[in-house]
Length: 247
Image (cartoon, rainbow, N blue to C red; front, side, top):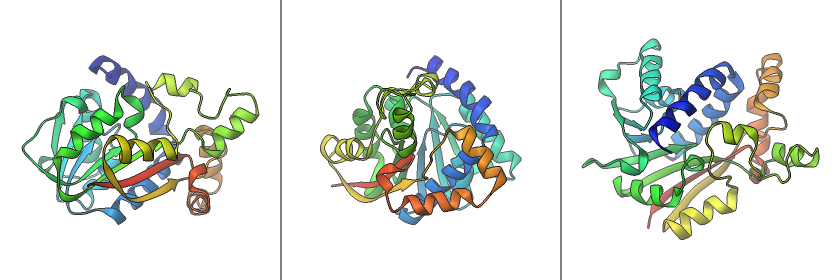
């Protein structure tokens, strides 16, 4: 994506994701997975969106670098962290397209949350980014699942031709790819020559985020229950998480 497209995507997320508490609950489950698999405390976050995960990382990571091609995302994230009492002078915010990022620094962990689906050549970007890992460092990546339970239901109802078909929402936020468990695993293992350390499903979902949000407001325990039950069938969860390392 170019910077103009990134700014347009930021405006979409700013106006929709921020009002969806169920979405934030989903991101928290990503956070638990990543925290449990961290190799160290020097972290590169690739793509910050509206800062939900940056805020989580800042609560326990001593050395955090955030890189995003959208100036709007970076400014929104910085302000959000400051509004929550985070000293952002200790965090490096770098405006750069992911495929153009360059640094002499090396990181214990790279976090690439919900980014691969937005770019034309995700394997090339992962291969470029993994160079910045220290030996035995870990690469954390997550993507929406194109064969999730809620997409399968949508296809059965005729709302999608196939579970993995692009939705109006995919186009709206600039998605280029729809992954499932096996296609993301194939990208990491065969196209990026990485070793899988862990993988998990993130959040079982059966309705749209807006509908799930209403159910969450009625029963705040719902996200925890859906995430835990989803571990029995991770390939049907709404999103997929992988932890990988260089071979």
